[in-house]
Length: 209
Image (tube, rainbow, N blue to C red; front, side, top):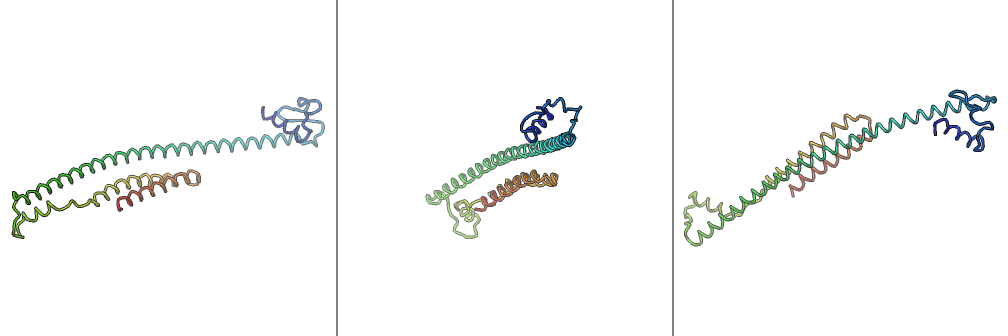
């Protein structure tokens, strides 16, 4: 239905018991408006008001659609950033696994050397110096000592991860400044920023345990 047909149907329901004019709408149409013998009906004024309201509704709809498209684009950009961040974290985790494997290898080597020295001392083919000032005595003590934990290394790796997440949160902060008064975009971006900051804090907390 055209806008005019919708208006005429509305008028029939509200002003003519659901019926068309007696001689049909063609008798009342006058170009783009209406002209009937009874000007008190104000039909032409109603038609103009109808057109104005419809135009305003269409403009509002177009504006809303533009805003939604902008929000969709923003969310898409944030999703791309999250994907990129996930790849960065995955790469960092891969490097961390490599470091962990290296540390495990070093610890295993230390354990093997400690076992070798302890067996050598017990079997007598390694002589333990009897003088406290002999540097060799301290070397043996260090070699047979248990491997210490590496909290500093663990904390450093956690900090690297957390800083990567916070970089994304800082980017979200910049986006919110650009959005200005657009409350919906700011709300979506603020939620993402809160999640990122909480995740960074969780990474640091995990390293401290």
